[in-house]
Length: 61
Image (cartoon, rainbow, N blue to C red; front, side, top):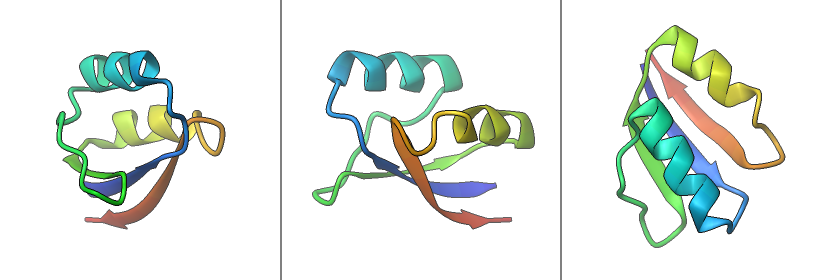
């Protein structure tokens, strides 16, 4: 699944740890969005961080 993540937090250490744990790309565009390919399990785990740390803006199957 392709998702678009909007990072709400500005804690760069947290963002780095989440990227490493879920193998998300290091890329972030000028709007603070990251696009990534994830599986169902990763998506459900990332949703646990909403809306405190991140917002998943778009999900494409």
